[in-house]
Image (cartoon, rainbow, N blue to C red; front, side, top):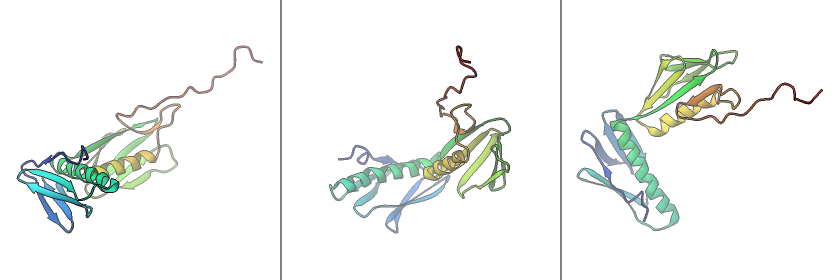
Length: 183
């Protein structure tokens, strides 16, 4: 049996879990999330514990069993404490600011880049070079952070670009001027 799928999920106080439309809806202080459950996977709420069981032992259903449990755990965590990613902007003149529901980035191009902030996420520019993305949906937070990072990924020579704060950039040695014994 799946080691991840068989672990029960503790539902804290203030969070309600309901089954509807062949899926599970989780409501909490940070919002409401919905996940469609595959047909051969069942979700049961017993008191303050949520358990996921499977109806088949095929390889694909075993994979969906663990995936469904992980998704439900992320939903419970998201509506209680939420998820956050921090991005650091490195480079002379590179900066970011939030204007309403739009993120405006100056990343060394001839024009500012405008990115619409998805609903359910909050973006703060704590400094002009530090962005914090927060939200209840782990997938939406990670996807938006990856989208912003892809606008100017960090380059390996000077490290300029948008990177995660905990990301370590492998640096390369650049060209040297003249060789010691050359012409």
